[in-house]
Length: 360
Image (cartoon, rainbow, N blue to C red; front, side, top):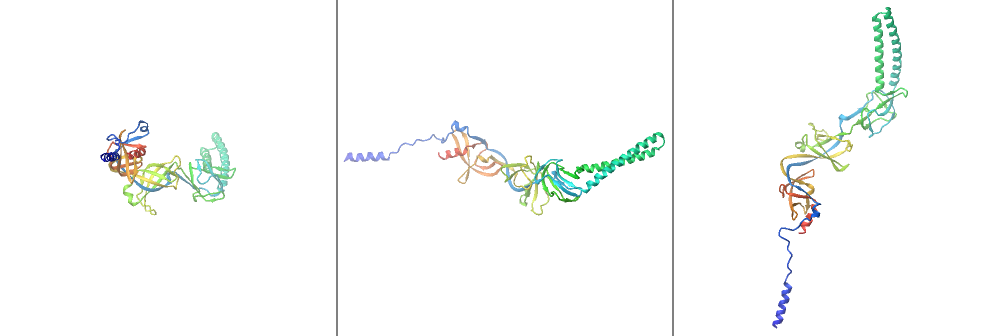
């Protein structure tokens, strides 16, 4: 009986005995190996003046100082056009031909004046010869010379007009040439169109290598928007691209229709990406008069409705840290709590490390 109870006691003891757990060294939960360390990047949390993004809207407009509206100075009928709306043209390029009765009149006047000049020059030669022989007076010679000069001046005037309109008498047309280089942004003529001198604009040429971004500033933001503020401009046409500029001027008069002030950004546009009429989203960068710790926005991990970063001290001393966000702007996030200045933050492959740390 004694041995029976002894056997039962030994069985119970063996069943309740647990294997000894393998403990990690104190303070070490995860270490970076040298291969993976080459695939990560670091940055330090640094204090900076806090920037605040102010969301606005706007549109692209041509620079009015680089827009040419062409109006005809003669009456006539358009016989041919050599351009379409949206075409890029260069200065001096023939855009249209115009038939006009004035061309016939000017051409007839030019022939008449040339004949009169020929007769007057012969008379001048004769008068000069007579003056040398003492038959004519100097006064008579000067009167004939003055007549020749007047006729030549009239001839120059007529030819200047013909040249101004690039007249081709053989075809009986005036050529309308591009007065500047740029894009045709408006057109109101076609073959057969009758036009009048000083009438409506025939076409508009805009140099779009520089455009204006006209920003809508509503009453609630007037106090925050100032000349010289940096802005980021985005458009649906280029979803992954941001254009940067500075506010150059702010109107002091409300737009009567939109009930906004207009702020202007003069924007270089050498690739012609921004086109008149485009709607844009604008982020104005307002700098606050105080500092906060700043880190790259890409370094932040959002998990379980909270924000974290991975803080690196050494290869075996890495931790996740909960942070509180103060503001975000242009790829930078300002932190109100959770970090100290000059702490190293992992910014590349940090999500993989975060998941590893969660497993320990």
